[in-house]
Length: 625
Image (cartoon, rainbow, N blue to C red; front, side):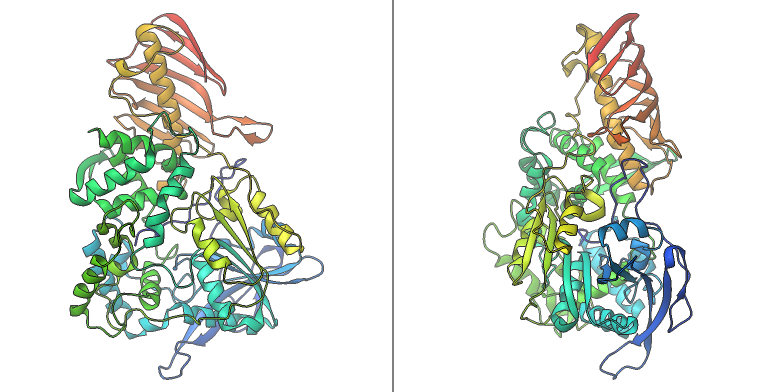
């Protein structure tokens, strides 16, 4: 379940490290467009039927934004966010980001609207379920059922079919005959649903990070089966060699171990007070999947998993706590109520939609037991709890069964874009969906995780593929590999004595090596802290103590006795290195730090993009980075 209920973290922009998307528009008067922002942005609120059969009376307000094309208008493009539960108008903010989107879709009128149940379109709020980031699978199912009661009988009107008909209502209100749709993640499923229901009004489809139209799988089987490929992309070639010889084996071994015996421990909150962390198998899989959106987490996870397998869980528990903070979202950012209402309406579960709740568990257990060997990839059958069936087990009837039309799939231009490091919507999905369209083309971006366009692919290869496709050219089928923003860190050592010396012999060389590791790890933690606390300047603890505090208005951070290697404490200020208006990739940091600690040789060191130099124990040291 955790694979979709996540923050859509835009990759930090290289020049400014600013978040791509921002929020906030006031709704216009119902039923007509009025000016509401810069660059010609117009807004309106459209009333649509709650129940299109007419049996249940009432309407739902749909908040819509549109941005006119510059010059000749070649078409209209709808921007469809993911989740389900993200409000598209709020997420894309086409007024504030007009220049970027007009460059991506030249000549297109752009439209973004909040799905029913999100943002300014009758937002669904289930307060207790919205805070389920630390709940167990059973607790999530109970809170989901409580959410169903909160929403009430109208919960049956928030399936993908309903969302697709809302797109049609917006199309009619705008007054255009055909629309293109750019969907991301769940937005790809919704875009295809619209194309199947209204092929005559579909001009083209751009599908980024592809969900199968019949998905998500109730047992998350495609995700589990394809996860090793995504992990191998994360650790491409020798990228993770200093952390682990086999990240797939490590992840599978630890996941199965945690499923049998969950791990508990404490980490320090920003306030300095301890927080208890419990890590079971499904929660751990959620953390692993989150590496496809969070570059800091991706850099740290292989080393932290390997350390936990060898009896040192502290670094991993710290990562878990930090990543869970990024899942603590307001309903305005991502409505968990809408998420569960849509998935429990759409789901293709082992039970019949009308099956009483009391009878479902036996059916679910039997279906799980009947899965063939290998169906859950390298994980035990417990991993099926990662799917939506476990989440919707107690959802009131009807639960599931809202199937989309079977086809035929329309003969329109389709471009599917996927990163090969995407763990929640693996690249295999793109090939499956592409096979159903007569005119589908695929662009794969190696090294990129979830949400490729305008986010993970900072090389612009995917954006260039989109523009080529719009112009009738053949988009590149495979981009060059995109380097990680932060290189995977080396293994967490047991002690300074176990680290090979660099730049000098003996204790000074080992201390220098420990400080280099600390600086590299702190860069990944800086990105983690920005993700966990929405880019703010909230301090976090080091893996073994001390503090890291991000600078408020610059790509920098301060360390205070920060400890990555037990017994070596690093303090000072480090700032992201820029070169010719572009950050050094992978990120490197420059600044001056002091070295203290019971296992360290004391001194002061200066870091540049390529080297470190200074004094330790009163003697000069220097090393290339």
